[in-house]
Every structure is written in C-alpha cells, then in structure tokens.
Image (cartoon, rainbow, N blue to C red; front, side, top):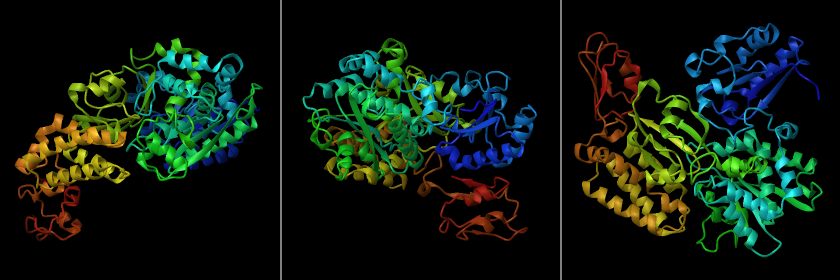
Length: 600
C-alpha cells in the first residue's frame, strides 16, 4: 500500500451524505489532482464522527485539524491553503465555544462534545474506511475472533461475557451472557444467531451509524456469539430504509468471505459460520424478537406468546440468540481487553457504556457514547450544550415510544437501566429527545400514541383497541373537548394495557402518557379547564390577533395569509384577523417584522 503524508477523512454517514458529503469527496479528488497532490494525499470516506450538528465534517491527519459545515465550494480553499501551503483555514474550524481551550486541534479530548464520552462500540466510527477490511484489521479487527477460535472453549467465551456484565442494548437490558448460555444449553446441532438491526424508535440512529461506520465489528461479534452457542448460521435483520448500512454490511460480508473470516473452517479451527442479510419493511413491532423471527421466516411480523423463548424455539423452530447491533459491537473489545476491564466501567448493575442518539431541542445533536452512570445533566448540558436560543429545558424523553419524560428534578440521575426505570422512564435502545419550554407535553404524548397506533400489529385487543381509545381521548383534550374525568379514564386504561398486552410494544405503549400525567398534569388541566395550550402548540386552542399599537399597516401579514383571513388597507388601517377563517398556520407571525401578531 502507498504511504501518504496526509489523510483527509470525510464523514459519509447518512446525515452528512444528505448534506452532499459525496460531492465534497469528489471535489477533493479532483482538486488534489489539479494541485498534483493526489499521490501524496489520500481521501477516505468514514462513518459518523458523532457530532452531527457540525456536519459535513472533514478531518485532516496527521495535522489533527477538524473542519465543520464543509461545503463543496470550501474544498478549493482547504486544498490550496491547508494541504498545499500548510495554512489552516480557521473560518471552517470549530468555534471557541466548542473547545475546552483555544487550541484549534482535532484531538477529541479538546472538544467539549467528546470530553465526557468513552467510545467502545463507536471506537472506529469516523476513524476508518468502513468499506476496507484492512483498515478494520489494522485497528485490532478479528483478533478477538482468532483468540476464541484458537484458544478458548465455547463455555469460556460465555463465562467471559457473563463476567463482563454486558446487558442487551436493545432496550430490555437482559444479561447477554445468560442469553447465550440458554441457547448453548439446548441440545441439537442446528442453532442460529440473529443481529437485530430493526431500529424503529423515532429519532434513533445508533445502530444505523455503527453499521455504517464499523460493520466488521458487528460481524465479528456475531461470529463470536455463534461459536459460543454452537450456531453456524446467522441473520442480520435490518430495515430497508437504511440503504447505506445495507450496502456496507454486504461489502463487509463479501470481504470477510474473501479473507476466510466467514464461511468454512475459519482460522483452521473447524468452525463454520455464515451470515445473511434479511431486509425488513420498517415495522416497529419487528423489533420485538418473536415478531422479528416471524418476519425472517417470511411470515407477517407479529409477536408470539412466551414461553417458549427464542433460545429454545426460535427461527425455523430451532434454538436462537438475538442481540442488537450495539450489544454485538462491544463483544470483540471484551474478548480482547478482558471482562475485568469492561466491568470496571459503569455502575454496579449496568456495566460498560451506552450509545444515545441525542436530538430535539439541543445545540449539539448527534451520537453520544457515555459510561453508564453519567448523569442526564452532563449529557444535555456538558455534551449537548443545552437548549438553543436560551430556551428553558423542559423535559427529555428517553426510550422512545416505550419510555417516558424526565424533568429538571431528574437531571442529576445517573443513567443506567435501573435508575431510569425508577425515575419513570427506561433506557430503551438509546433515543434521547430533548424538549424546551415551547413543547406541549400533551401534544408529545399524543405524537407517541399516534406512532404506537400506526405501528401496532393488531394481534392483541389491549394494544389494537386500547391505544386507539387513548389516542381518541388525547385528541379530544388537544382539541379543547376534554373533561377532567378523562384523566382518570386514561390512567386506568394505561395500566390495563400494561398488564394485558401481548408483547413489549403494547406493554410499554402507555408510558409516555403516564409520565406526562405524572410530571405535567397541570398542562392537561390547562387544556381541559382553561381551554388553553400553555406552550402555544395545539392549534384548536389558539387564537391569533394583531396588536393595534404595534401594527405598522404594512400589509405583509395579509399578503402572506394563505386563506385571506386578514383584512385592512396598507398605510391607512390597522389590520385585523377574522378568526372564523384563520387556519392558525402561523404564517402571519413569521411574516410580521414588528411582532404585532400575537398568539393566545
């Protein structure tokens, strides 16, 4: 391989790809040729750096310079000034507020966003070319697989995973080692392993980013799991909406075959193992393991009662272990560095790190990997930078539709499985949506219930019918037609659904309602009694008017109103809004430069 004096790394994850990182890559290739630097400088597409809000991101090694919000038009300047003349393009670097010091360097320890993170599952994302197996191998890739196949017995592998304390990162938090043990204890030669990459929570992109940035880590974890439980065939069940992840996984599988790291007699150990991709249609319920198994078998994705559990009766009726992407991304590092190393990270009952997709009303949206025990306050303020525009923090939703809202008083809660449940939410797969003073919590609960109703498979009555009744009551409340009795009715129905629904989707569906009722009951009461939405979100409870003392008679509001609900004569009359015609779209507010339009 050629040796380059400089390496230019460009984020090619979904987020940056949507902002034309592919065009930036092509521009670098062309511009380097123009300056006759193409033999000295390499350009590499990587996975997600994590700091998505600053994308597209370009990193220059070994100079350790970190450029953000790069556009195609910026490439000529970076090449001509930095790569050719050695002068850093300062205006494209992170601002001082993003750094611990005023040193403009890439070292992630100097960037506030990374300061309190510890990247284990994401260790290679943003550092290697995910489509080049040699780069993964250079980062100790497949050493763990070689170690277990040549020097460890299957039970020793399971014991190491047990001792590490690794728990499933898909949401349930069950002991990974125990799950493997159950399958290993089952008799028979035909067993299976499955990677659950059916990431369906709104705002979640942890698994997608890991698969896009480091697919071989997941393949290696699957191979180790298969050896430990006695399986020879694996499936990666991934939603078809992840085209980049699907493409890179297939490339990784093909490369692993070429290097004899998948297939027959891996490492001359006598162990055979292969992996197939199975594309899902995007049903949220297929994240539940029995529904996922049904989908792999070509049936409609619907959950089945347990027991029997998949470890006894799984895909094709055979013993099966299912782990999610992030869980498998930790396995090789545990084998390489030891259970004692991994269990030294985190809390007593929740070991290691957890990846979160940080989104919503937060300055630094992106991918975060923190040691268990880190507080919500540290994630939201120290890593996320707090709410933008000096807005007040209101709540954070963890666990997606299955989780709940936590408020200011829970911000110092150390994050682990048990603490989040105790606080009224849950870990889930890792979605973390931040909300500020402008969010209506009744509307938030309604959003998640709409999602649940759309995604319910309809197999059991509590979920199929019960969630629709909850949505109907929430809709009446946000439309100004609610009654105080509805609050008690909703709460009672929520607990009935939790106790009787067939699968985890239905059992956790009421959580957003219960948590918002617990923390924000006053907002529900305001919607019902005062017929007001305190956050000014619910349209049916809003009215718009023009303050005559502020109106400059410019007519901008009237000219932009899509339904001609505003009347007046430019330069002569104060404009007025006909509330019977107003559709409450807010166009008049955004059109008025004098803050004359008021929302009540």
